[in-house]
Image (cartoon, rainbow, N blue to C red; front, top):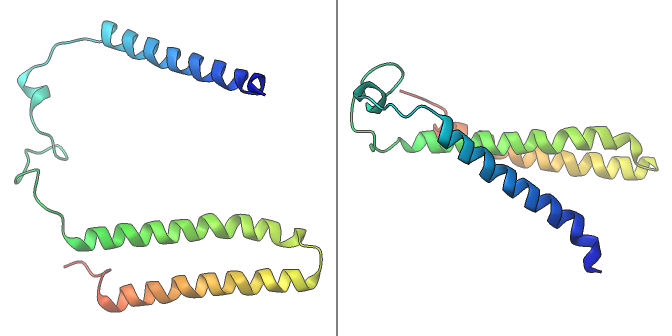
Length: 123
């Protein structure tokens, strides 16, 4: 039984060694000449306007969560659309269509909720 895992272990050992070798070579052969310009803070080509540890507005996080939700929606919709023709009979296809309609409806309700709460408005 353990012999089935030997190729996986060989792969992991080679990958680990390759990672260590490449990091070591990069560290040994890269230029090490830090100056004040390289060590200064950088924000879009300008000096930082304020403290870099300032808090983000909560709307930023809401938009990020919305992006993740709709990104996941697309990640589920594409394979579902490709596999819809592979279902055996019309009853199964209709069930799959209704299930996806419920899935999309829940996401649309969430989107409308966020829209009504003003999460997408930037002042």
